[in-house]
Length: 328
Image (tube, rainbow, N blue to C red; front, side, top):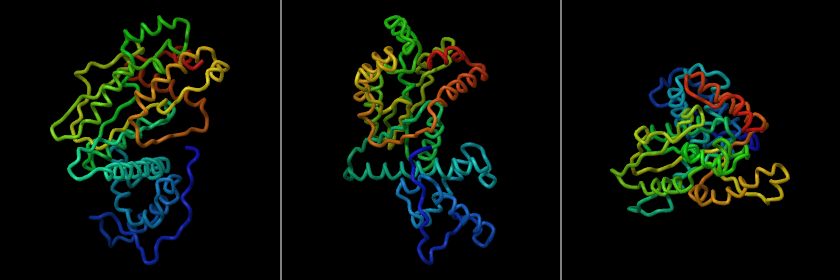
């Protein structure tokens, strides 16, 4: 990830000693040494300064870091005592820092209300290029919220794609526009459906209230996709404290028409469609997580890998040619 500051090298507070997680044998020198090493590794992460953590704050909350690390390892079925360098970095430099930041955001959001108020959930937007890991990040964040005792809900912009029939009509209306041939770009989403869903979700503030969250089946109709049967949609119960809403084009805003048409005349209608997306999506979002990548061309390879993996699982997916067509 780009544009994140590294943690500065501050010394922990004088006299502060790190201890292993509660319940661990404190008499084990090897374990204490391992915790000290992990503490130094956490402090070296690129996100700690951005989320407002100093070395002292990390030391004071080390039990929380260890607990989160154990939970994430369990979620992904990996041995927390034998993490590879890549696994260790992804857990302690990415998933956990982002989760702790989200917790702070939720606390700040809830502090704005009085005791007895019905507090709407905080909607956190996760904007990142396709294939960059945002769905896996949201999966981990949702799990950590739930095992922490907080009701959370997850949504993707994919869940609001037009139905297969509506997508067919869109394709006919804009025949010849490759950018609207398949799902994905602005104009291929049911914005009123997304507004209705998000408005219902932020009203899920009482015990006993519940609703189903829409899902989209990308394998339907030979990989062209369709909205999943409502009987398969997951259910979420109130009171919900946080909504994790992810998508590759969350936060996108239209540009001057002459700018987009200079790149590709087919972008004109996409750019126009973007005008309606703020009211449909972005206005609900109070906090943002934005993931940047170094090389935009990687997106095509990641999308291709996703479709190949879906076909390998026996599901229908876009052909290589269709993916290439979408990104040509």
